[in-house]
Picture (cartoon, rainbow, N blue to C red):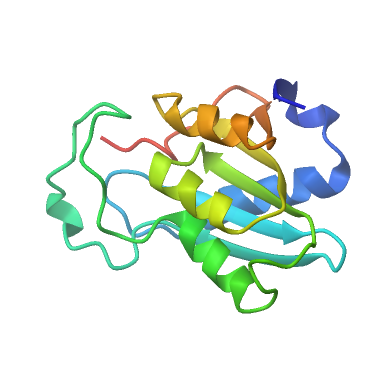
Length: 165
């Protein structure tokens, strides 16, 4: 439990596939600032949903947040990858179902997304590649007993996906 750092190669093959799918989902992002992908797995039935950020963003290519450091920007009004994946999973499995859930994400969730994760009870683990920039969300999720697993990808960070400035 708690916070761990592991290499991609040491993950279970299914976890590797789903984290790779989150990276692939990030490439679908329409955001001019960040490309983030997320995958939700509901373990018992292996229900998988995915999402990417940027859908519905009112800033377009002229994002007023561009150039700000992670963790200091104003909240984005576009849909976040995690929320897109969570809402898709809600359509398949009720949020209060006792089925365990796992999240795979390219960038650690912002505080608003962490709150959304906690609303859908029974999240057990969150696998992520890059840190968000502050620890508010980590502290909140750890206090709820969710295991956080930072994954070191082969060759380091995922070049250019999460941060585009």
